[in-house]
Length: 279
Image (cartoon, rainbow, N blue to C red; front, side, top):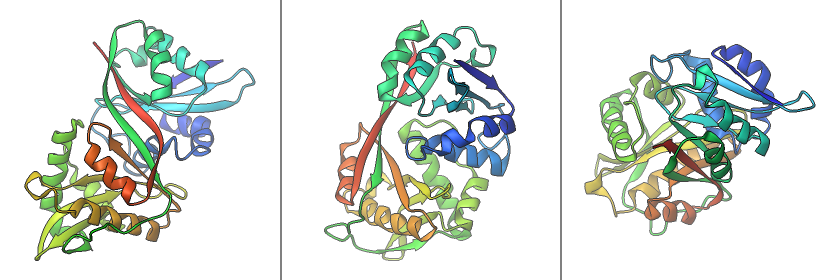
């Protein structure tokens, strides 16, 4: 039983791709990151070289993987319990993991990983993964209407994605290339009231039959009017129209308002993920 680490994306896809794809809900973040790297190359998330890993069991079968696109936390997919503890040990000795100081993992794996890591750590953020069980209309319906974002909205989208990143603590800044790609397949939706955009939501290009919504953002001065519910409902419909049969999203557990909105629209909890950071 062993982890294999590499900077060779093609080797990672060949070895771990089938195992990752076999669990598309739990591995949604891993799959969307892999899709971005395949479409836009190794600099899809910035100038730093990404690295990858896969777990091979005692029978020689690969059963999961991980990737890291610095400066973001290492992203661990769904793997067996033994792989989690082995990863904690590898963090101390594997050269490719030398700079890792934060990990994005399933809550069920966090305790074992923290214990095996060998250094003090704490949970910095908690998010809940939801899947859409059956789309429900927002009640009451917010004023306004939805519309797909176009190139003319690009400056506003950049501004709002940057604001979302600052507020959520997500590293990096808005990418015009990424936003143009999303616009090309209808992956950015706005909510408009009285002729003015008041909220936005996006979705990742479906991988297989699964897609994930994000980000969802309403400027602070426009909150409390139901716009986020309206645009989330609209982007959920758009995600189905793009070919997804499973629609997912993450919600920050520190924000009970957004969690409530999503559940009222028909989203049901799947599992929690946490960001584990060295201290």
